[in-house]
Image (tube, rainbow, N blue to C red; front, side, top):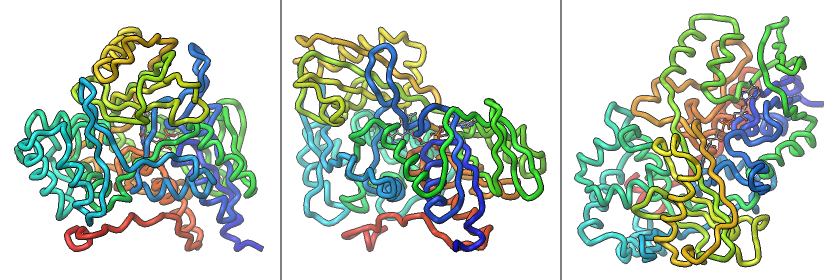
Length: 469
Ligand SMILES: Cc1cc2nc3c(=O)[nH]c(=O)nc-3n(C[C@H](O)[C@H](O)[C@H](O)COP(=O)(O)OP(=O)(O)OC[C@H]3O[C@@H](n4cnc5c(N)ncnc54)[C@H](O)[C@@H]3O)c2cc1C
């Protein structure tokens, strides 16, 4: 017999990473969980679908994780898909002309583990290396508190040159945080850089899903069903109503769901719309006001299929061009392996300038730029191509945003908040999504006198960072 608290029913609204994390953790703990998702598949912003123009199953965009994403890795373990992640400790920086610099850890203690390859890197001059090292030194000892200062101001204060910003800080941080430096909080720049690149070699290894994203996250359905839960796809929630001690949730499709508790695992703009359907009180008015402080930052990806293999690389940072990262999907996803032909995805973060550019022009630009790195592209036939533009890819991790990121407790009794934008201490990432889901599940359990804990600790600093961090 389960303890009484854990026989309670929970309605999770939103089948993105945060909703999946909350739902799976609670279902595993014995709660009766139903997950409502408006789309026909799970994954939310980390999704894949059959693209009508090409007939290929594509990810809406390449999603990567790092070794420091401890909670996301925990979720993959729960779902039994941890072996579907391709891990790489090496990152290649490519210059136009094709010269390669490979960054990888050695046996040196943190934070010096990447220093040998950094010193050898051809893409930076000696002066660049001295400048970068001075910048990194400022991140060594502590994470600054969130302040009005933005990362562009920080870079200027630390005498980082235009070339060093373009070739080092942009591919490493602006891409990871999906924003231009002038809109990035220094706290989050420092925090991410320290956990990923200074604390340990483990923290910086890059993980790339080998399954299409909706297949990867779709495993949550079976996981929940095996634990008595239920996933309702094509279910767009439109209203809430308190009925006795429960919440009645209605969908646009006319279904009605009852639950003792509700977790709203929605993007901030979707929550902002749904708040109007919930009882008004001072705290809900404040939440509504705070949601106005969030803004989006877009990501564009260009998918190109060639009639031959254009490179032996699996992934690389592309320097000095609009296109920033290359992922060789036919090498990374077995489902796309195509007998020596290349399917590559090129990713452009914070791609505001491309939002209004016609898709054919984006494809031409990407192909022209790819030729600068791989001469084979000039000879290759482009068999098919498409572009995905995600206008609302991530929220902008601006200075002082922490002031308005809410925790899991909501203004309404027995309703909890999750989503990558809530107060997780992480920028807009899948890791933040999972953390928010686990935090909401913990808050719900706590309110029901259940001491469940789901959050997984960060990786500990290693080597000299144990003393410095
Ligand atoms: C192009 C792109 C590239 C990215 N790259 C990376 C990356 O490399 N690494 C990384 O870690 N992160 C990346 N991210 C960010 C990452 O995808 C998000 O941070 C994460 O997926 C957010 O998860 P979430 O559950 O908080 O929100 P969401 O994924 O937005 O989930 C919310 C869900 O709620 C559903 N929903 C909304 N309204 C309703 C309603 N009324 N009723 C029912 N359901 C509703 C939505 O359909 C959605 O499924 C990227 C995002 C994009 C778009």
